[in-house]
Amino acid sequence: MKKLFLLTLFSAQMCADLAAQVPHWQVLPNAPTRFGGGRHEDVMFIDTQTGWVVNGIGETWRTTNGGTNWQLMATLPNYIRCVAFADANRGWIGMLFSGNEVMYQTTNGGITWTPQSFTGDAPKGICGLWAADANHIYGVGPYSQVYAGGGPHFVKTTNGGAEWISKDMSDLVTGLVDVRFTNKDSGFAVGQGGAYPNTTTVVLFTADGGTTWQTRYTSTKTGIWSWKISFPTRDTGYVSTQGYSDSTTFLKTVDGGLTWKESTFLSRAGSKQFSAEGIGFVTPSLGWIGAYPSSSYLMDSYRTTNGGATWNIDTFGKSLNRFRMFGDTLGYAVGETVYKYTNETLAASTPAKNASPSGYELRQNYPNPFNPATTIAYELPKAAAVSLKVYDVIGREVASLVNERKAAGRYEVRFDGSKLASGIYMYRLIAGDYVEVREMVFLK
Image (tube, rainbow, N blue to C red):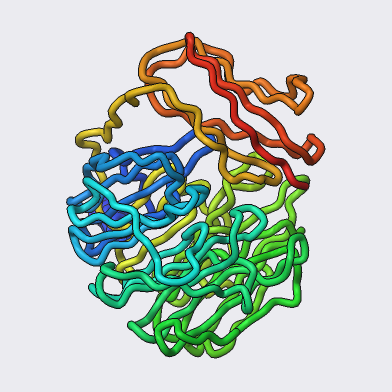
């Protein structure tokens, strides 16, 4: 009996040890967070230890020890959408809603950033970046002519950022979101075709470094568009789709992108739908899809273990917008915070700290125009009684978003306009003696 007990105890301990060795997603305990309606937009690692995270309130964070500690490198007055680094020092960030300054470069790991200029018709936003090697870096954007104020472009440098060339892509698509190259010549770009609300998913391919492009896939389903790309192997790849449809789809290729198959991922669940954003696979079979961050949508992540044949809810993260994988045992993802796919046991060390803002600021909402939800960010250099309200064009209050005392810091509020009529609205911030008003546009 004693031997049986000891054998059972040993077996249970062995199973527990084996389970601990299986990689799984965990919250990085010291990572910067974006709870309360916001999220990090992109994450980039040049190796297993050194990486950067960017977000819509202009922050660039860096880790040099695999996410154990994070340092705020810079804060810019722009909505940062994407990031790519060629090495530990040279990197680029893409912006939205920033006028003509849509890309910045750093040569010191993110401490300082310099605006970049383009040869050719300049884009109005950059949504996706990819560094194929130290010299060849590619970008695409913006995601929509309607919401971002400009047509789709492909940009590239072949000399490590010394010069950038921009190419208008409006003859093929109406928006571009993400880009991925397998080498300096061959790559994919994804986005949308057609006009809202009848947009379609589109996958483009180039074999000559972006000089010419072919359309590899266009969906027959409308009201959707391509979002993010993931290739766990050279042959097997996936593309997530976002949209306003009652069912969400994803794309899959098993022949290196020559052909693509569109499959239903999830149908509407009650009054809420799921609009996919980030997608990441560690093997051809095992992968995850994240969601658009809005109270009007389901925001959970979903997992498949059979290459997309079936999906089940996975509770490790919300509002996931980007996955970066290193083989089948290590990966990073960003959404409300930063997550790590590992078999390590992650322990807290030094929490990420964000210096207090130097002044009051009410930022332009994102996206703008919006449908149905948008994010409003503001900054306080010291504690104050805060009021943030939304008004229609004749001055009637339509929403009270904040009405309380807040400590110094950076804040975000999610505003859902689904019950309002299309039109121009004002939002006003009062913090102590500081008052500022901005406009936003709601388009149904």
